Each structure stands twice: as structure tokens, then as C-alpha cells.
Amino acid sequence: MKILNITLCLAAGAALGYFASTFRAPKAMDNVQCYKSDVKGVKDPVFSFEGKTFYLSDLPLPDQIELLKKSQSSYDQSARSMELAVLRMVLAKEKGLDLSDNKIPTFQEIFGAEWVPESKVKEFYDQNRKSFPSTSTFESMAPQIRVHLAEMEIQTLADSKLGSIKNSGAFVNLLPAPCGPKVEMQVEDQPVILSKVKTSSTLTLLSDFSCVQCRQSYLSILSHLDKLSENVNIVHMAYSETEGDLGFDLAKGSICVSKQGDEKTLAWIKASYLGAMKIAPNGPDNKSILNEVITNSGVDRTAFESCFMAPDAAEIIKKNNSFAKFNHVAQQMAIFLNKRLVVASSADQIVDLTKASR
Image 1 (cartoon, rainbow, N blue to C red):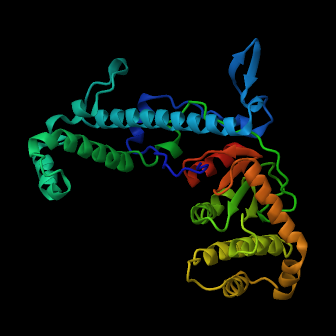
Image 2: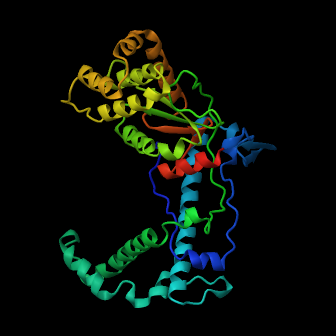
Image 3: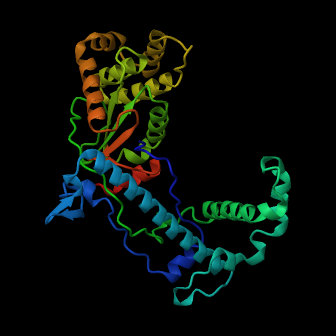
């Protein structure tokens, strides 16, 4: 089960003058209200049985997570459909087509035969003939190729035309975003990467150093720290399922370095993940990587080693591992905003959620 699915959200972009003159930009809705407060059942009831109304929070956590994933998938598809409708409106306006009475022409109506001309279809077929079944002909493959090229063209147009409209406020997604279940978790003894006294929001990142996908996702989020730092406290809960391996050592290290001050924590965790990236069946041993990480993070070696050898750090990692397994988020990276599980489609979307959670 993948809690952080990297499906890039389309932002929207060109022809801002058109939107400014045609639409009255609606006020952005707070789609993460449930991340701000402990709303009973996370906003809406899910079903009624024998006269009792059940909310999301009434269900076992595995069922909550399964419903959240399905809701997020539906939300993403709906958002994509809206963005493509916006793209069609932009392109139709550029072509001088009629948009009265809320009529939005299709892509085919906008471009006609010039959209995916026969010459492009034939060129694609010739270039990829070896990959098609030996019995196929151009006539039999042309419809599929035309659809494929059309989809690629739509993606290209979306990337180029809808780049900045999201930030401009001209286009606002008014669908309520799904909200994850609230999970009881203790973050007081975890490393704080960034802490702002004035903020009341906390973004908790639970990740396993032994998980390659976790490390890559984590580094992606760390690259957005400049956008996140003004909005939230960022806490790191490291764990490793196997005691005594490199991941377990690195997780202990992330705990120990936090005792030397927040300014060292980020350096350590970044260095730890970069060090863990080198893990391979025949890679360097744990000690050499740990030495490299200590050097790169700039922590005090004596203080660090004293903490590292103490049992406290290992107990915290074991507790984090138990938490991950109990809440069905083990062997992956899980993200919590104010202790609510987040299903995000990109690091940018996590930034948007944290901004709205203030």
C-alpha cells in the first residue's frame, strides 16, 4: 500500500487575461478544514446501519485508509477532468470559438483534422513498427496510435498552457478534498527539523531508512523546505523493521543528532538519507557510512556516540516501528498533518496543505 503516491497535479497557466475578464475568480475554499480541528468523523458520514450513522473515524484504521485511497483517486480524476475543461476553454478562446452558454468545445472540435494528422500517425507507425505484433497493419493500428498521440498532445498542451493559473487564483478547484483519519502519535521525543514558535501545525514524516522509495520521497519533500518552513513544525519519525542493520543505525542517528540542536538536525537527516542511498548488497559497511554521515552533518562526535550507544535511541526507533505496523503504514513513507494521515499527489500538494492548515 502506497501512502504517498507521486501523481503530479496539473497546475493551470496561460491566457490569464481571458480568465480575469471572463470569470469572477471565486474565493479559494479551505479544503483542509479537517486538518485544522478534530472534526467528528472527518466531515461526512460514510453509511448508516441498523439506524446508526457511521463516520470515517468509527471504522477500523485499515478500512479508513482504504476509503481514503479510493476517495483520493476519485478526487484526482475529477480534478484532472476540470483542468482539461479549463485547458479546452483557454484553447477555444485562442481559436476564437464560441464559448457562450457555457459551451466548451472538445479538443477535436478545437483542432479538427490538424490535431493528429494522418502523416503523424504514419510516421509513428513506421518508427515503432518492430514493437507492434507481426500480423498488424497500419490500418489496424492507426486508431490506437491516433488516441495515443492525442493524449500526448493534451499532456504537452497542459504543461505549456496551464502552468501558472493555479497560483494566480483565476482557477480554483472547489471540490472538497478527502481528509485522512486522525492517528494517535507521540512526536515529543522525535527530531524536529524545522520549528516555528508561531505556528500551530505539525507535519510529521514517518519513514524507513531501509526503504528506497521512502528515501527518495523524503528527499523530495526536504527540497521544499523553503516553502514549508514558514507554516509548520516538521518532525521526523524514523524507524527500521530490522534491528541491527544500517537503516536502524541511521534512524538512531536521526534521534541522537536532534539532542544537539535543531540547526544540526536537518543536516544530519539529509546526510543520513544520502548515505543510505549507497546501500547495496556489496556496498560499504555500516561503520564507514556512519562515519561519513557524522562528518557530513557536522555533529559533535563524542556527544553523538554517547547518545548512540545509550538504549534510549533504540527504544524510540522500536516504538516508531511498532507504530508503523499497528497503523498499517509500515514499509513505506507516511505523512501526517496535525496527526491526520495525508494522501498527497506531490510534494507541491503537501506544501499547499500546510499553507491552508495555518
